Image 1 (cartoon, helix red, strand yellow):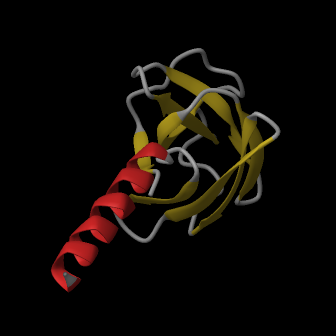
Image 2: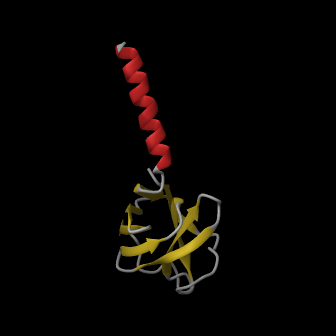
Image 3: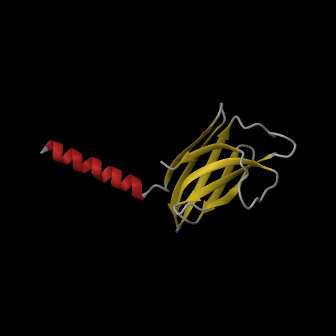
Length: 124
């Protein structure tokens, strides 16, 4: 009986975890010591995301001088969330999403990400 209850509990835990995959925590990691931590909370029909980053270099190069955050939704579409300023970012995301990642870009509002992904993380 105890085994059955334990199996049922674990099954429910896995089911709930997968259904709320867009509300939770995101640990973004890259090569080296650079890292970001984000939290996502579903509130009033949107996902409120707050992010803080550590060990970001002020400018990668003269051209690539902005850190832009992107999300990937459940259908695989990728969209610009905003810029990390002074190691922080706060934004609202409307669709369900499964992953965040950060790229270095030349301007504030790129339509699609450059190939220079410096860190990425899935929603846990």
